[in-house]
Length: 144
Length: 144
DNA sequence: TCTGTTGTAACATAAATTATTACAACAATA
DNA sequence: TATTGTTGTAATAATTTATGTTACAACAGA
Image (cartoon, rainbow over all chains, first blue to last red; front, side):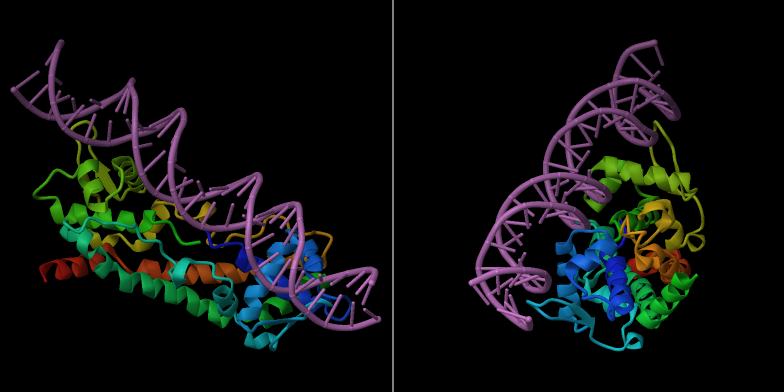
């Protein structure tokens, strides 16, 4: 299955905050309107991003803001913050291979390092891309 | 969400076929016993692997065999064969961003190339690993 | 105190994955 | 050609995960 849309939604949220922060109060309703999902979904995402130290949220009066310079937030930071995969493991292993079978017993041993290498390759590429890159490109499309 | 266990199950299947091909007839029941899933799940996987030209299956009398040398089958071949992700896209985009919003309208434009780069990095690493690597390591664990 | 907002629980709905049953099509062989 | 064991696949069920929604207490500021 695919990696949860929470990831792209979170990036979308950052782009919105950065774009509109001077002209609007950035509430969960405001963001929900752009992403086109229920405001509670946004609040849950914001709450995770806050736990990761990526945004600040003021309660009561409302409003979200980005907590760090855009070029210090990587896509990997966001990916990790919104917990797209179980336990940090990209690959889902079949649960109960037969331990009586020599292959079943050792399939994990034989595969784990390789799957981890693949996952690392993906995460490494995520780390190279920052919100500054994304938002720069978004702005240039918006201006067209 | 995680990438389907179909991927690791398929690799497991290959390891079983290679390990037991001289001593047993490799039926879906035999494989199902090692992977510990329903035989129909195995048959469906084998059917996809066959479509990709990775295994040969003889109907009626039964039995699966690997169609190519182990070092010519990469994990990417298997990953593609068993269709772990929708439409080949690793990332799930939120469906209906608001087109009235400049950010909603351009978020795809701004992100698509970056997501694709990340996906390519993962697939590239998958391509570097062959069944020969996996099964060699599996055998060495089995011998211990 | 009033207004608008966040945080979160509880629940509902939808979608995807995996499991299971059933049986026709098939191949080998006795 | 009848028998046996197997594959291919449809149909359906069960399970799990993801996403959506309602509701409301906690909160901040005016």
